[in-house]
Image (tube, rainbow, N blue to C red; front, side, top):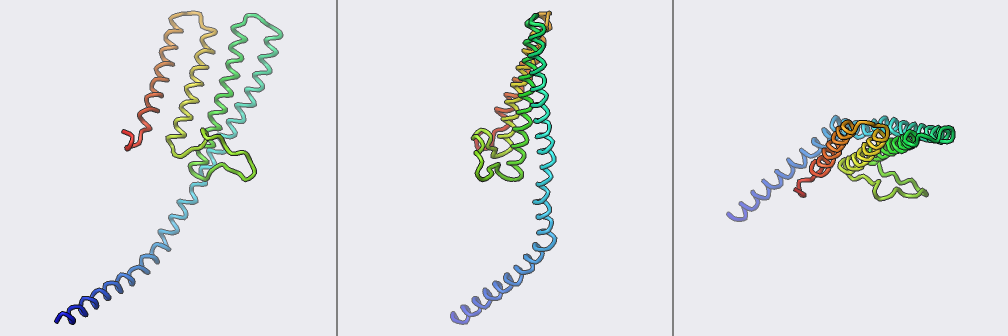
Length: 197
């Protein structure tokens, strides 16, 4: 009786395994059809990120070129009109602002490419510095927000040079400080992972 029961159990097990094996090709066949094709399409859709990457690189290049042009113009203005110094200082601060904006766009372009396409590590070329390596969107967000804070600070100093009213300076400074504080809080707590809370 025990032997017969074992034979029946093994037969049942064999039939169940056969049913599983029979179901597997069907699942594979279904996956290799519509689902696999759709997943390949989704994977290929990552290449769409090349559009913003190209635009960001173009904007960065434009900001760098414009900053270089503005620098030459500022030098010429200093030579032609050394005084007042405030206006000349504002011109050079604008140059810094433009270069920072270009750097922000370039960082965003590199981040998008690394997150969606692959690492920027061409053979034979010097590797990117560690602070430009992006692991997730939080890394990209942190670097872009840090650059935005720098741009806001430089822009405030640039406007501060030409301001005459102390009250207006105070109001502008309070507004810039509020924005920087909000970005800092968002960067500190908004990017936390669940395991870090």
